[in-house]
Length: 190
Image 1 (cartoon, helix red, strand yellow):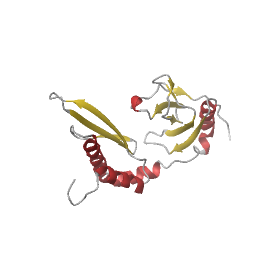
Image 2: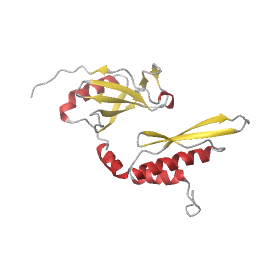
Image 3: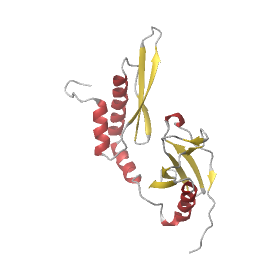
Image 4: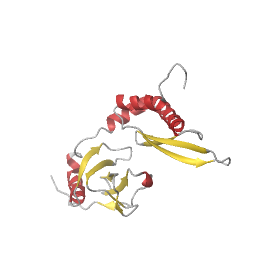
């Protein structure tokens, strides 16, 4: 960080995310002990649904997080034109399109039977999958085979193949995707 810019990279990234209506950055820091018994830190930050690793090992958690924030900020600025498209394509709505109403009802019944709701639906990703954010008391994770205490889960829904996958926000389950689950609906003729 230059002397001309006294703000921390974490603050700059936070402001950028707020201005561009992105999710608040989420940091994860690992603590390691070096050969000389010094404690070192390395951080990664989640921004725009991607984890970005900071460079190097630092003597303070703050420096490690600032490193990750700087890389994330530079990456976001570099991809700003692509990011603008991604933001428009992933604006959450309350429901899936009308032609997928049966799929949404099927999944709403599953989570509803455990006190959950579909909080929001994100537009299809590059593979045509919708992301359904689950709220309420439904936090079951196939990875740990139990409910998470705090973190929410979400479903990736493939309406073409009538399958869905469960994922969650818990750091212990990062990268986990459940086996595909079938969506059992009766097709209705218009």
